[in-house]
Amino acid sequence: MRSAVVVGAGVGGLAVAGALTRTGWQVTLLERGDRLRGDSAALVIWPNGVRALRALGLGEGLGAIASPAPSRGIRRPNGLWLVQPDAALGDEDEVDGPDSAVVVHREDLHDALVAGLGGQIEIRTGVAVRTVRALPGDLPAVGDGKHTWEADLVVAADGVDSVVRRRLAPESVAVAAGCAAWRAVIPWYRAPKLPDLAGTGGETLGQGHRFRYALLGERGSAGGSSRGGIYWAATVPGAYRPEPPAAQLVLLRRWFADWHAPIGDLLAATDPDDLIQHPTAELRPMPRAFAFPAGPGGFVLVGDAAHAMSHHLSQGACLALEDAAMLRSLLLDAIPSRSLGRALDAYTVERRPRVARIVRQSRRVGAVYAANGNLVARARNAALGLTPRMLGRAGAVARQWRPPA
Image: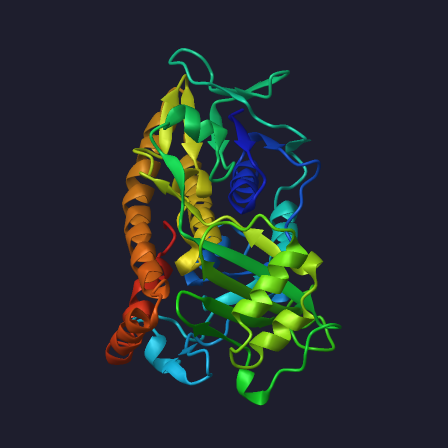
């Protein structure tokens, strides 16, 4: 039987592990944490991510845990429109349909991915991979200093600080993206009542500062998510903040104090335990390949281990799901020592050019969002007023992906 070791149980790792298990691979999943868990925030799954979930056979349950994503219009801090919702759409956007964008609680998505693992997988928690064996004549392997796991294929889904990537592509290093970012979900019982004009969510852009929010389900019921509430995300210029969450929350309330409703109310209703600060690093340069031969098969990088990038297009989880869907297709009939190597080469060919294009688009959008100072921000706002679809078209490059037939 074909064998695989998957390192990391985030979105990409769980998706790949489940896809391989369901297509006849013997899979061992290694996770650094003491148990498999998702974090308590939420994320937007764009149409490409929805299609990837469907290609992985996980789309049926999405309707039970997801809520429609809000319109893509952008407001100024005073509440006036910077870009009207209709003008923010890309030319190929699907506004309403089976693959339209949704918002989902990360714990709900995590539970769906864990359920998709099935019962034939070996799960090892509390494993911090420290060693990587990549020799031409040996099975690829990883170890934690005490035990070694070898298989025909090793999938590195261990994030931006991937130990496996550092061994295989040492030239690719994590670089700070120049901003700090937070996420939180306020449960319905603590969530403030929103004004009618707030709709189901929105985005506001200031001088280097950005705030987004979206509803998860409906107040008073589970709605579209078993963990309902109001999700928000904020970005500010600068480095990762070292203060404890309570102090970070004080800073956020100060930075966004004079922004339009309901931003101040959302921050006031947020508890320190709700707050998650997440890294905003990207890989520079991107690895020269996403797959590396070893023995009868080799290593493959997925998700942030392969292509961590700034979060401005909100595509991290979606690209990891794309990676999993592509691997599933390429590895479906791959045989170690015969066609597996060719399948891994094809993975780099299929994925790297697309990801490189999205990285470029993300940096361009990041430059727009990061405009700081009165003159620069005014010039940015004027440019968006003249070409309102600029941001929508940038995101459309990512959202238009279709899974392999």
